[in-house]
Length: 257
Image 1 (cartoon, rainbow, N blue to C red):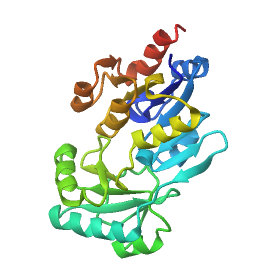
Image 2: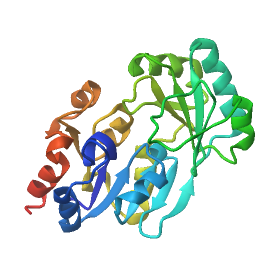
Image 3: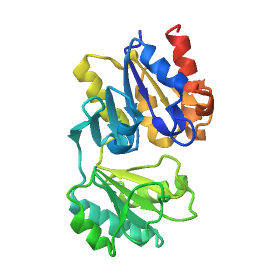
Image 4: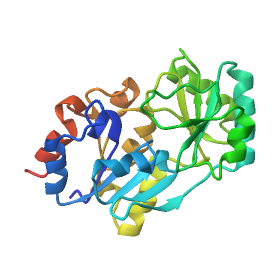
């Protein structure tokens, strides 16, 4: 019996351009199960999709109530850790740029240009100014142009893995950094615990390395047809790609819609 659906957004539930299709929306409305979004995206992005229920945002650092549009829990990275990690990464990745997600906005140093013009962020003159203005940090971002994300993640994990959790969701040269132990799976497991839902009652969908923790924890897991090779290798079940409403197709079969 499936009581909870855990789904990533970009490359999974959403079509290119961040679009939630009519078919997928109708399927989510029709299923007899809790739907929990698990994403690297911050709450402000998820709030615009018109979904209800719960979202696990910023790779597990934030729990967000989609119905009331309020943050119910946040796990922040201490600023002394942010400073230490930034300094260490600069030593092993000379062209790295640093940004921080505060939960309300992204603050960047000038070397960080990992966002397109359509992604809201604020660039400050110096990295120290970023630290000074950040009232809290729910996630660090590190960006190195023209570097392959898997290799970059290996370098970062070796250098700062004792201080933080490092992963990525597919952006070229873009790393996502959280508190140690913070992951989509850890937060989802705690959420399920409060609802009396076991892992065998959860079906999960994902496409990138930052989804691996959830896909490994859930009783049933699907890699999207467009997923990263590591994700496809980790999952016995493969859904059609997000461009074909793959999540909706699988749910229609599982719930006999």
